[in-house]
Image (cartoon, rainbow, N blue to C red; front, side, top):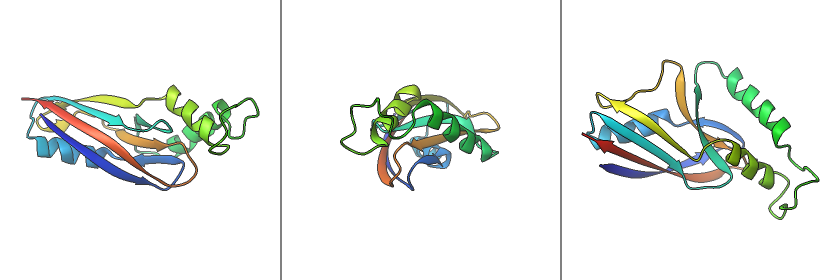
Length: 137
């Protein structure tokens, strides 16, 4: 078993691909066949596996979530940290805070066009911590 904590700087709201960083930890683990767990230790950012070939997918996801959880919604009571805080929590609740990816031959078994993303839901930059746990044989 191998576990590491990754510190990832985000530029603000948007998706940051972390596939290579997670793969580096799989390589350090020396696990040939097993499972890689990825967990984000925050409530206003999330994890996502999605297409990594066309950047329009990322823009379209942001557009869709802007409609689902708009900033400054007057219905939100939790506003002490700004108009993007409660929408960030909502976005996190609608997505994932942990992922499981199979490992084979010492590699993440992602599909051809799949990437692992940290999705920052706040507007300002943050340093996020992601825990990667790899186990198997």
